[in-house]
Amino acid sequence: MKLFLTAALMTATATAGMADGHAKTVRMGTEGAYAPYNFLNDAGEVDGFEREVGDELCARAELTCEWVTNDWDNIIPNLTSGNYDTIIAGMSITDEREEVIDFTQNYFPPAASAFAAMSADADLAGGVIAAQTGTIQSGYVAESGATLLEFATYDETVAAVRNGEADAVFADKDALVPTVEESAGEMTFAGDDVPLGDGIGLGLRESDTELKEQFNTAIQSMKDDGSLNELIIKWFGEDAKTF
Image 1 (cartoon, rainbow, N blue to C red):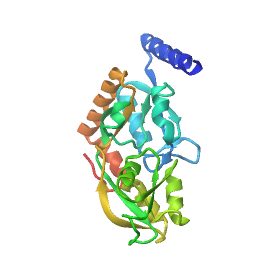
Image 2 (image 1 turned 120 degrees about the vertical axis):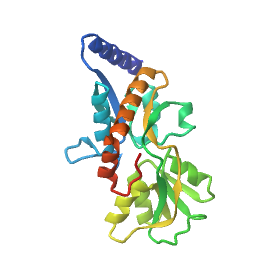
Image 3 (image 1 turned 60 degrees about the vertical axis):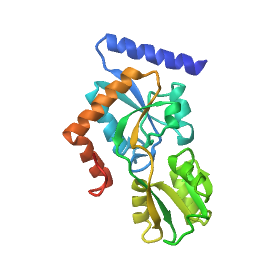
């Protein structure tokens, strides 16, 4: 009941603000633990590719952004219950998720997932594979015949490989590249890349059709003027897939 009243009060306040000529405040929910998509910087503030994209989208849509961090494993339930208004957290658009929430058009194109291990010949077919709970990667591993070992955070999946709990970690390749590079030869990619999902979009409650339209328009404008590609290259490098 407290949660419902709080959400209702914030909605009423935002509506009143629009009537007074002020920009509507939109709470942007992210994980803050999936660099370079999103992470907390040394000042404890949300940073990364999605912070820059989200702030620019809000500016173009004439909205005021407020950033909220939430653990990945309950990020969708806390959207639907009103704790924030969007999910902007490296979340791939999938049919399964669209049964519960709605998505904008993608602001990051469909990209590869990959395996990283301590050895390039790690057993990916019959071994133990670590993946973050509730991701498209964990779903893929569960159906692959390998043994799935799930963790709440990306960092825990990598640690499981390093300490020998898992033979490999399966995650977005864009997240794994800096992890492998910073391991100074300790970790390497194994097997082939795997294309999954329909790209990454903002998650919204199914009832927020007007907000979805506002963000879709803003995303399209960033695609049209090239600014979205510029941010992708800034955070993921010249070889990153762009629009």
